[in-house]
Image 1: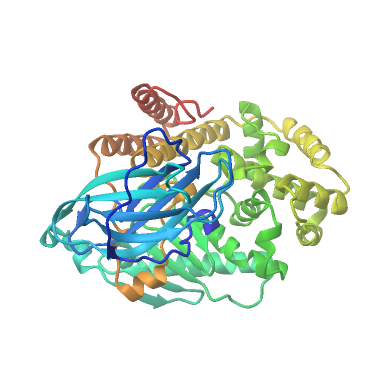
Image 2 (image 1 turned 45 degrees about the vertical axis):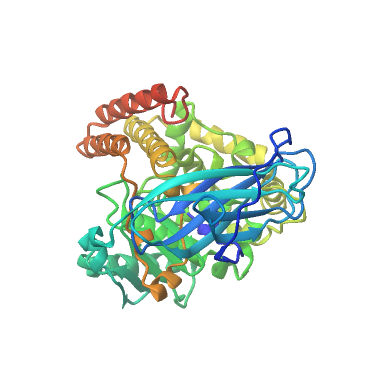
Length: 489
């Protein structure tokens, strides 16, 4: 997955100071700003000496634009509360939100409980009401820091293709020769498929923390979780090929700004196609036919818009199989010409960009090319093994994302916490890349996920789906609502 969907730090200057908080808003004032989200990092238990980061999402709840609002983080209550970070907000249209990120701005001391308050201040505080959210947290003594984290240090090694950045004492250090061999092989495969003669400077950062579905690409860097296959039904060489394709796409097209012009549907489809599958090697066209037979097909007109908001595994499969269909129909040079024909005009949607390029190069609209493609897929025989595996994969990853949204939101792929690894190396910060939340209910949920994964690995896909169904039904019942976890099909 491209890292552009992770939260990027915004320009916000932390200003530690002692100041008295503004008076609370008068009760009858209408609230114009609301705090939609307030996060503290690293996730999991906090220890004395941690470098804390903050995220605050503020929404304009009023009916008029707001210009000049600000947001701040305070420690403590009362007249002597300390401002740890503050920032001005850009102009907010009615209903619009803005997320401000401060990375590693406070070294937390001393041990014990403390209070943090996120405050959103409107431009005219006497006439408008802001919002605040208070969190009481606890710092464990520094001496309680787990030994593995205390001993971990950033290290680097070079393989033919890439620089590998990892933490000492972790599984990545133990298995580094295998990881380097996999990376070298994946890079050679992708470069050969795209016809790129020279290697690109690429960094692979191996972290123990599971973020998203295990892989992100941010600029020249791949952020990959290891170990992976004992947590997810995924194949690491396939993930490497996927992320390395993202790394090379713009170079292949000889367009530095290609990501501005290509719809996400196309960007991810290229990566799935070149990788030979999404999470694992898989026959894309027969698997797309299996998807069609299950009744879960999403029409391309709808899928292309807001691509990442649609069911993840379904969207990626359709995208990869669509690329395969275009290459089958017109060959590789024509497909590359199609990608280079995409030129996003001001205000254009992804669907409009895609449709215009299809008409120019393939002389068909989205609806026309999809109708012919679907007709061909319908003629393929239904493969019961592909259908069963596809249904399990969709159900498993929907359950995984329900777990992340509920118990580990910083790992959820649309809001993953991905601070700058280079700064982390310079500052010798490891906690954000190692720790995970501690929650008894979350641990139970995670264990049931692993039970399903292991059951499927033995070939009992139906039993695995039954575990997932029971898990998600209980989760939905306890929360009083259902989502794709409990209704993946």
